[in-house]
Amino acid sequence: MEKEKLRELKKLIASRLTRPMRYYLDTCTRCGLCYDSCHAYYGIPKKEYSPVGRAEVVRRAVKKHFRPSGRLFPYWGDATALDERVMDEMKEAAFSCTGCRRCMMYCPFGIDMPYILGIAKVLLIGYGNAPEELVMLADAAVEKGRSIDEFKEGFRSVIGDMELEVQKRLGLPSADDLIPMEKKNADVLFVGLSGAHSIIHPAVIFNAAKENWTLSFFEAVNFGMFAGDPEKMQFIADRVVNEAKALGVKEVVIVECGTAYRIPKFLLGPLPFKVTSIAEKIHQYLAEGRIRVKEGAIAEPLTYHDPCQLGRNAGVFEEPREILGRLAADYREMSPTREYNWCCGGGGGLVALDNEEFRIKTGKAKKDQIDATGAKIVVSACENCILQLNTIKDGYGLDVEVKSLSELVAENLVV
Amino acid sequence: MSDEIKVDVKMDLKGLACPLPVVKVSQQVKKMKVGEVLEAETTDPGAHADFPAWAKSSGNEIVKTVKEEKSAKFYIKKLK
Image (cartoon, rainbow over all chains, first blue to last red; front, side):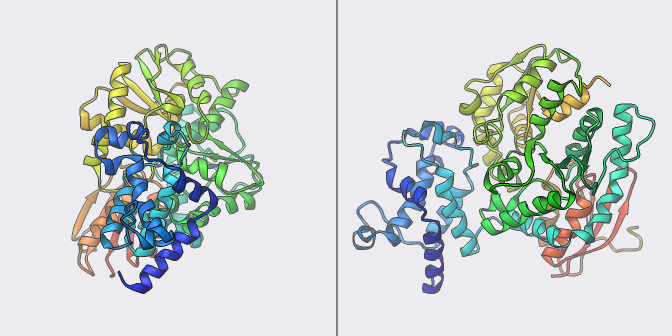
C-alpha cells in the first residue's frame, strides 16, 4: 500500500478512536461467548464469521498502527499492518455482519461489535473498496436530495394510480387526495419506500384513521448508513428532517424499515417533531379506536419476526405483538424471542448485495426458528427482513407466507 | 416505443422490492457498451424519482419514460 494512502487510512482510524471504541477494543478477552450468538456463525461455523473473528481484523490493525507494542513487537498479539489482504478481510468482516447486535446481548462486557466494524467500513470507503451497490445507492439518494425538484413530477405521476387502489380498498366515493403530498401543517409526514406496497397499505390505514397526513418525496432507507459513510448518512437523513421542518409537521412516521426508524429516533439529536414507527402508529390508532380490525380473523398459525433494528436496537416489542394478538387466532412466539431473537441475516444493507447463497446459509437459524413454531404465516415490520425471509423461504422450501405488519392490518381493517 | 429507440437490452423488474430495481439496472448498465440503451420495466412507483436520481449520480441518461397501465418503462442510455 502506498505511504500516502496508508497515512490517510490511519487518519480515518484515528478519527474513530473514541472513548467507547477504545473501551471495546481494549476490553475484549476473546472469550468466544459471542460465537454461538451470531446467525452467520450458526450457518457458516468459521471464525471469520464470528463477532470476535470480525472485530479481530480491526483490532489487529489498530494495534499495529496505534500501539507502541504493536509497532515494536507485532508478533505479540498478531498486530497486522494495513495492506491489500487486510482490506479484503475488512470487507468480508464488515459486510458479513448485519449489525443486529445479538452478540452484544451475550458479551459479558457488552461490546458493540458493529460499532468496531464501523472502522472497517470507513476504511473501505477511504480505500475505495466499499461495496459498489451500497455506494451507488447512497450516491443516488444524495442526488435525489440535491435535485428533488427535478424528480417531483415523475413521482407525482404515479400517485394517482395508488390513490385509486386506496379508494378501492376503502370503498370510498372519490380517490382525490387520498395520498396527499406537500401538505403544509399536516400532523404526520409519512416516509415510505420505493415499492407501492410500502405506500398503499399505510395510506389505507391513515385514511381509515382519518389522519391529517402527507407523504414524503423521499425513501426512508438510508444507504449511507449501510455503507458506513457518516457524511452521506447525515445528508440522506437530513432530506426528511428538512422536509418535515418545511411542512411544519408534528410527527414523522417511518415505514417498516428498522434502520430508517433508528436513525431519526436515536442518532440525529433533538428534532422538532416526534419520530414514530408505523407499527407504533397502528398500535396507537387501535388503542384510540380510530381503526378497527377483524379480531381473530387469521386462523392459520402465525408468528412474528422482530426486526433487530426495531426490536433489540429500538425497543419496539409490544406494539407489533398487541396488533397481531388482535388479528391472529393462533399466534406463536418464536424461541428465543424479543431481544434474544435470531437475526434473519438480511440487515445492514446485505439484501442489496449480490450474496444470496451466503444469506441463505446465514438464514439457517431463522429457518430453524420458523420451523419450530409450525407457523404458516411469518410477519415482520421491516422491508429488509421481509426480503430476506422470502429468500430463506425459497432457499429452504419453507411452506410459509411472509407478510408485513401493515399489509396484514390493511387487509383486515373493518371499513 | 422500442421502434423509435433502438433497445439493446430489456429487463423485467416488475414486482421487485426496494432497492433491487436500481441495483439490477446499475449492474446491467455496467455490463453494456457506451451508447447502448436499456429498457427497464418496473412496477415500483419510487423508480420515477429513483431512476432519474441514479442516472444523474452515475452519469447516465434516461432518454424516455413510458407509463403503462400497471408499470413503467425507462429507456436508459449508457453515457460512460
